[in-house]
Image 1: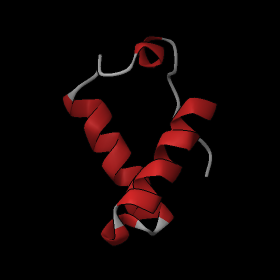
Image 2 (image 1 turned 90 degrees about the vertical axis):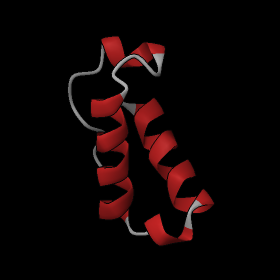
Image 3 (image 1 turned 180 degrees about the vertical axis):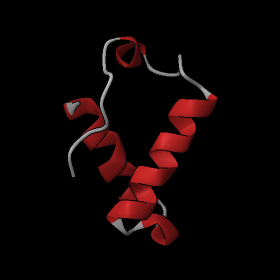
Image 4 (image 1 turned 30 degrees about the vertical axis):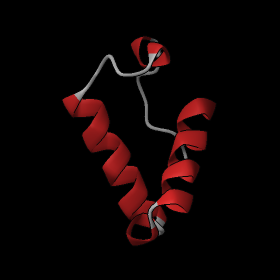
Length: 51
């Protein structure tokens, strides 16, 4: 879950339009649904990272 939190933070810093936590988390969730095997740790993580 910590890696997911770092990814959300990276998204927030890289894309200004996703600077809000909720928008960045929604973007991350959408990516995870579209590409479930994008990152190796997503096999083991079942919950979203607490923001």
